Length: 290
Ligand code: R5P
Image 1 (cartoon, rainbow, N blue to C red):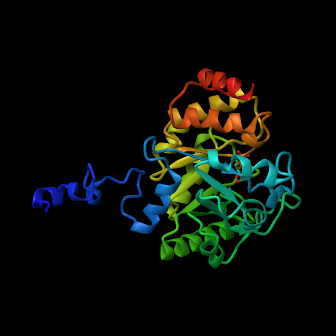
Image 2 (tube, rainbow, N blue to C red):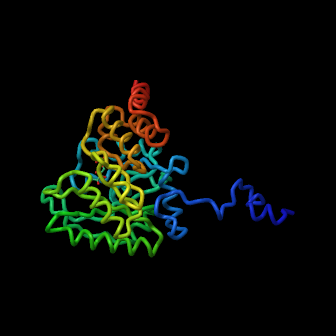
Image 3 (spheres, protein in one colour):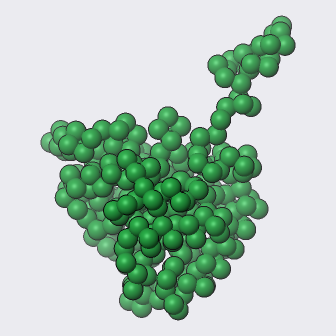
């Protein structure tokens, strides 16, 4: 029979730390409900507090872009190395086996392609997110885009209402307005607008002065990788972002367009979770890709 101290300390449950008092480790998110925190805990690594999300949602805007012609062949084999899969319902259902137990961040907005570049999106039905067992939902905010700013912010707010109802965190994807400078001031503003509207995660781009973007955003910020870079440069990008306080990456092209995508996934993880310096991670990448 456990004594009262053991029960209080959680020892009677075989826990070193009482589960009820274990601190939740993600910035700004401690006041949320159990379900939302549980889903976030599946996405962010408990030791590093960071995540490596594998983004392959590009097709709904760009079509079969290089490296994403066959999600079943190019992305599915990388899934086990990712902390989270970010894709659309179409690609998840057709090309990722349902036996894959990785958390999913479902791209939940749709409506236009790069051919019109209007960002005039609508939301898919939230039942889809529940059906797909999404651990998070993502939608874009087109901050600074005259024609579509209002509609994308309204969409996003509605998605957060839905997410809060079901305990599903929402990631804000900051779009780059045509006339906006890609600098810390603009990304800082776009990230803050996401958080003000209830985002649990913000995805934006790395830029000089990124520590200011992170400091003025009260929830975890992850960076998109952007266009394909040489592997060492992409690893430097990840390293710099983490040094500035990013909580990880949501990376696509720099992984799936790499000559050795699996090796690149592992190298990115070594930076994001284990703090390897870019040169060390690149050496790791080379050793794996041989
Ligand atoms: C683009 O439509 C998506 O939001 C991507 O998920 C995002 O840009 C990350 O992918 P990449 O690292 O290729 O930029």
